Length: 333
Image 1: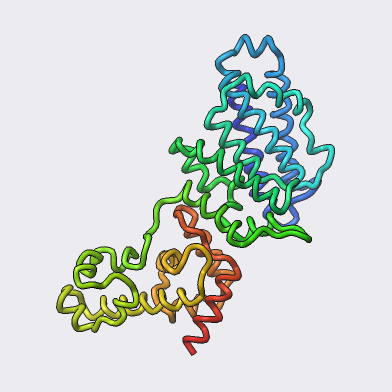
Image 2: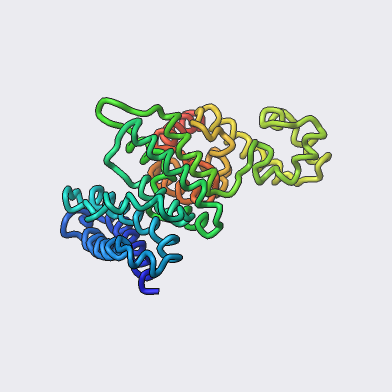
């Protein structure tokens, strides 16, 4: 129990460091984040020293085989955070790490260990450009195994160590260097894969969006399969054949206009369906409502990023939201 408690403390300290480092003045040597990482390092050094003893491996054979890989990757995570948050050089090195790595093939690669490895790879900042994109891909390979456990699936949605994988702008920044930048479509694919692994499914097409979903089959029987056909259908026909109110028809018109306006922006990857899904989650179901929200584009993007956290849809980038503001603003004038 003491050994497991030390491992739990490491996770708690690292998460605290990541969250605290996001506050002004709390990153770098001497900060609260630094202090938490120093405590995490103390715990992981103890655990590595303990498990490097052959007598302890034999005495606690079952625990050794199930815990060791998680401890090793926790050590790698601490080193990554010391390098990233505190800009430390030699201090970011974990004693005996090289020796410890040689023992990995003697133990089980548990789902928890794969999860820890995914976090470590995600947070690493020693690689840039295409090499960082490859590191993200390796993290997602590990995470694909780990999220077979429903508990780890829920962790992954909210884990601060994986938070950047929700944000296409952060991934794009991490994969860029002064002389090299990974293609936007490739960085989008990284985030989209993460979202597909951890998020709940979202509507796949326009008529699967919430205002229309209950009537999808009835609309299909009348030859209405997309936004353009719905927009051309007279309101009186919709009311009489589907027994819906004028208010419902009005809302359908608003959402259809919003969908088509967003479609002209050519949002990357998600398409208009994913974008409008998120806007509906934010109770923005018309062009006018979206235009009002776009008066504060940063606030709108942060809201959509938060709303997208549990869903298999990529929140729009800053550039995409800016394009919405231009296109929707011009069309609304």
